[in-house]
Amino acid sequence: MATLLGLLRADLLKTRHTPFLLIHLLAPLTGAAVFLAYYSYSPWSASDKALAFMQSLGCALPALIGLVCSMAAEQEANAGQYQGMLAMPAARITTYISKLLLLLCFGLGAVLFAYSLFGLGFSRILQQDRLGLPFYLTGAVILFGSNIFLYLLHLTASLQFGRGASIGTGLAGSLVSALMLTGLGDSIWPYIPFAWGVRFISLWTIHASGITLSPAVSGLNTGIAVCIPGTITASLLCLLWFRRWEGRSTEN
Image (cartoon, rainbow, N blue to C red; front, top):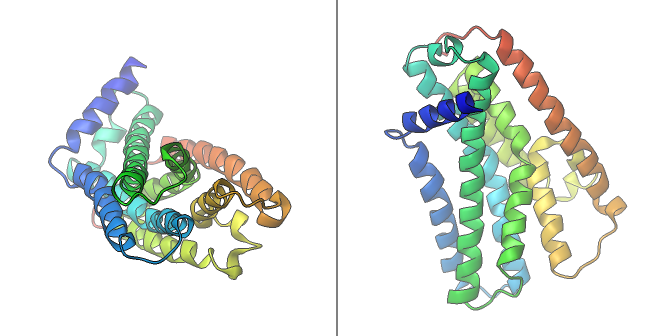
């Protein structure tokens, strides 16, 4: 545990002179401000406004995850072609877990920050919210938890193939997540990891609005049954992969 905390502290220090911290602060702040400004004169209902904001963040998250994971990997490449991760006295798996935990902690903080800012602004400034801050905090946890799989995917892609693969996959994932909100995704979304976040947050918002949906019709049960085991399996596979990984060329 002491080794892991030390590695986490070191990884945090490495981000001090990079845009990593700024992205996690400005992206939620900008997103919440833009939506609140638009909602100040939009004729939509309060529940539709909340749903649109939460879905929009869910659609943007794959691209943002691809970006920050690529930044974390490139920082290690530029610092010595990954020798900081591969040649550490600590177990190699511990160095991977440290990097992953750093990304997850900042990701959770950014999502909580975005939803909290929107919830407070929607209720205190616009005075339109009827759902309450706990609704947004719970939604943030749901959205983040259903996207842990993408952090695993993008960190592995960044380390193995470079920033282009991670960013490109993230942009494609954001497009896919938006498509999965349409009728096209009604029956297949539980099997598409990019759709988990936007679909789960949509179901949470609909439920909080007082509308009852059958879990069988909405795909909720299937989504949970695929998302949780899929994330656990991906975690184990990524750890096994990194244990045998020997680095890559920084030219990728």
